[in-house]
Image (cartoon, rainbow, N blue to C red; front, side, top):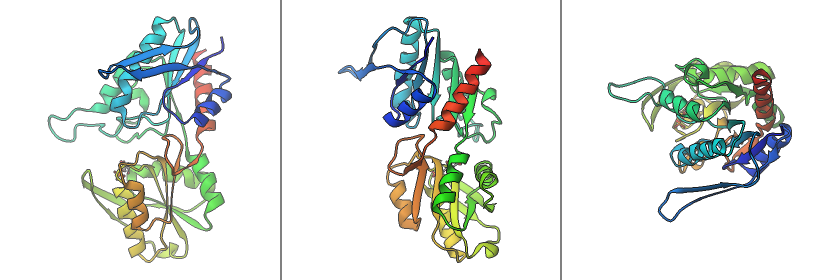
Length: 298
Ligand code: R5P
């Protein structure tokens, strides 16, 4: 049976590419709020006995998750044979342990919630740090698409003589993968975060890289403070103003402008979350990850 893909909020161009790559029909639905704020949903066409894909990026998740779960429940009610989720950005991955007594480990709870409603999940570069793999928190089959090849391609085409810099050890997995794929040199700084917007970084010796263009690479830009501190640091070490590259354009209000004001010459992200800085297309990686997961499920 040909799958049907419903787009709940990704860029239409991403939805078209993913549906095309997976040879899925594009379905349409009506999704709106009643005057009291509750969700109204209606799927066009017949989903009975068909595999269904919901495409929804989960940045700013709290407003999106309830409609998403109601959509999955509706599709099951309509007889869909399987309901899978492609979430180019997967939320609630950073609160992965109890840092202070009494806190919720929301990465785990969110994993349980989605696992209760979907048959499979595909995402791009989830923020895996203290949790080693999605299997630790998701009970459903999952697949991870990697943005590194596309990021490496963009940097290779756009930046002459780059040195890749990760702001902290967590970023090493992304920076190292981009470096491996491109043959570009890379190094990783040390970060200390003492609050949501209070970040300090310290550096290894940048002496050997003075003539190169620093390209700061991270998985997420949220407030921008991690990269702003990193920009200040590399510039103070005598390097030219950097280019900032990230997978997920979470961007709290004003973050992109703050990065440019701090000295970033360019700020570039992938299209996992729609944003004016999107330059790198993850559709081929999503299609490959979903196709290989489906093969396993056959
Ligand atoms: C942290 O663990 C992530 O890899 C990013 O460095 C972080 O989420 C960026 O956040 P912000 O832009 O708020 O500093």
